[in-house]
Length: 366
Ligand code: ATP
Ligand code: MG
Ligand code: MG
Ligand code: MG
Image 1: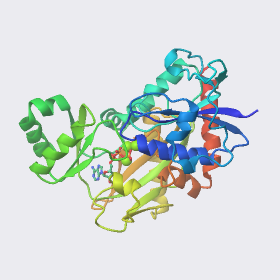
Image 2 (image 1 turned 45 degrees about the vertical axis):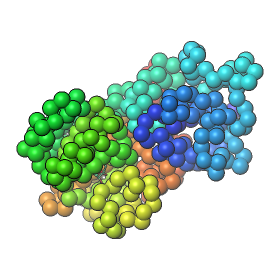
Image 3 (image 1 turned 180 degrees about the horizontal axis):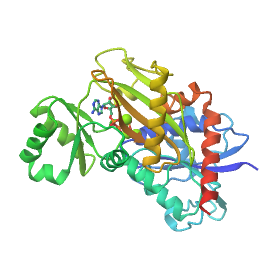
Image 4 (image 1 turned 90 degrees about the horizontal axis):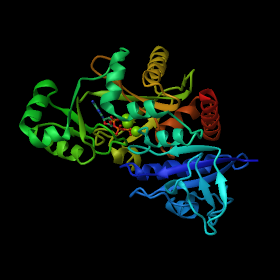
């Protein structure tokens, strides 16, 4: 029979919409001969929706003409060994019970990419795609991530961090510290998010204050980094105990109006940037990027997949790691699938491999 894949998407994070786009791309690419997809949408307010409602969360164009599972079907879906109310989707008749074989949490950001859903799936004793609890949590939190990178000697940029509470109670001290230790221009980020949501480039005290206020909307922890003049290169990692790195890709800036890769540049098809695979860099640098990507993956104890984002400094040619993303975007415009396609693995093959790795990892744990 077909493998029953529970596709969890949406979620409570600032990247809800990106997750819908990733889920749409995954549903369209999953081989309908091998997999039956059970869509499980999480609404922005955190409600878990039954299959029929879940299909409706996706843009209509995304429902395959021959759907893997009928949009009308609303059977009881039990995730693994969990059977408490919050995770049981009662169908119309309220009786049928169907188990999933594997879960693919196509969730980005908090409550999805950060170890929370992974912990739930561990408790449910069900295989799932991607990183486990530790790697997800460490990969999501830019402060924890940087500490781990530094501990294994991976080069990163200058940064500092503080709590929102400090910013709210002692704003002038926080500003003074930033101006003294980092200076301008600088980047202000919520510690736990993605897709550049809440990320701002600050050039003076006024824009810094605005940037801090913005980041504080999203997280109780805030990171400030020196703003570097860089080429932005990424590398896709795939595997469990013996991870492989793809050919790198590069966001090439076509129009200077793209000051940095903000949300609009990533998803708005502005035409200001183009993701080029493979990145136009020397073979020696490709090897260095791939090695560093695998080291970063190991540093957080990654599994399944991750995308490592690099900065190549224009002034010194130094290669730095910006960050790792444990559930990188899988949308039609995303780098992760493009880098594997350029490396000889098309999207359906990539998804097959990710599901295999999930099953393998589950067996290894036993
Ligand atoms: P995603 O998870 O979608 O990759 P994110 O929200 O985790 O993004 P970052 O990748 O840390 O955020 O930063 C977003 C973008 O901001 C970078 O791709 C880059 O364009 C710019 N940027 C961030 N930090 C710096 C920096 N220190 N110097 C120069 N540019 C930066
Ligand atoms: Mg990120
Ligand atoms: Mg991300
Ligand atoms: Mg990034």
